[in-house]
Image: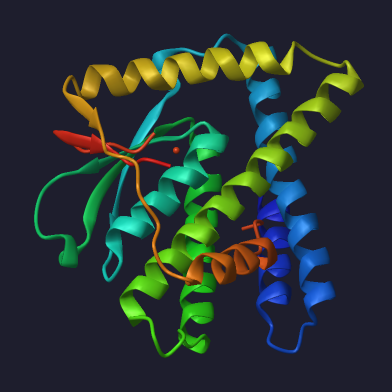
Length: 242
């Protein structure tokens, strides 16, 4: 990501996270940042495709530690950020959940950069929100926070999908390059192939059943979250469900 673009996105993040910022102002910053990061990803993919066909060797692998508490939900957040941005993440099934998880991320460098930036920022935003919200007296803090996280995760993913679709449509309307859908499909195929070669025994996890009243509050926080700044699996083990 260019230094200029990165600085612009970081400034939007800082503005949206400012406690003095009104909800309307934060939403405006959020939308602008989400559009910028989506536009960057689509434009970079099209530019690379115009230079030379992508190959499996262009796909990188990076490792990240997802810390506890709530490491399962945090790894699900990483998955749901990565999937719309063409990053495939694999959760390694080792150690205790309370210690967090090691996660491998596969993708093109520009997409990995987008995911890492967003994941770091959204973890901070989620932590700030959870620290200020009190669950109802009849519900355990753990149940409330887990439900909150899933509301946050699902809303963030929906917004990312919308931003990516919008950026792809605008790129096609300009008509100055190859088909966006074909370029992204080719890149996804290469990422999936790289994962399959690295892990031959991936398993999907069971779907998550969300319990707790925090889901709606998490959805609201996900709608406000700044998006400026995946299939998750275990090796061996299971992929995070949606």
